[in-house]
Image (cartoon, rainbow, N blue to C red; front, side, top):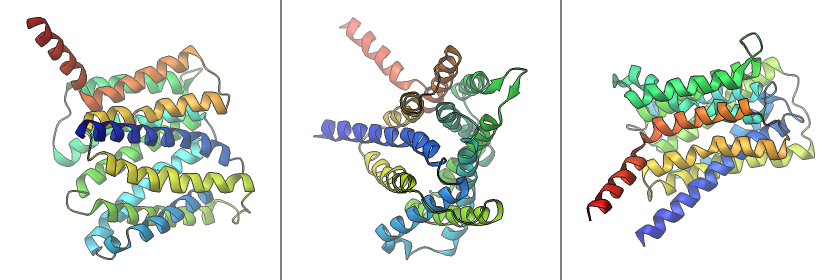
Length: 300
């Protein structure tokens, strides 16, 4: 029974990785019909309303300290999605999927500043691999980083700050309440930026309605619920490996549906970043277990 639960949990997390990977393709297409900040405003506010409705009883118990923590986390969340969505206008969805995923490599170093816990050798190796991969993907002729890749790199930093802030505050606050508050803050900031930097709210084309609902409901609400439930029944190593496949699915789906070009340079850059993610998230513990199992079998 436990093995079945673990299997179902891993398959559920794989579904989440596919959803998040497809989000890059959906967002890229949606930007043909709506401006970035209005897209974010719709996405976050719809997600906020749905999550507030589902978890209304828990939200009622929110305290002032929850609001303060949620405010900071929401600012980081908005910064990540704002630079990511605007940057997607200037780069490919495949490149962005892998550069965005590099945020997990940055987290140990940011958390070092918060908790004084030094990164280990795996984190250092992962950082070198990661930034090598980003350089391969991002630098154009003349060693100039493209504007879209630059914004995506900033987006990865914001997401690393976001993850670190959640890791710090979730120990003292209800993570569900923090999630709802951060969605609201990100939605409000999106509206403010849309009014400041974009024209009046455009009429939503029929092609964009499904995309907005998909990003709001599937990529945010449903994925969040599945992840939180599934992680109760599987290991953190499994979770890290499976969710890191988001970048792989994002790159693959971009090649299939957006007809983005596939080059050796793109492949090498992606492999370097993916290897960095696996290194920092798992410390290659699963490989050590396999070697130990082989040694034990040989003794027998």
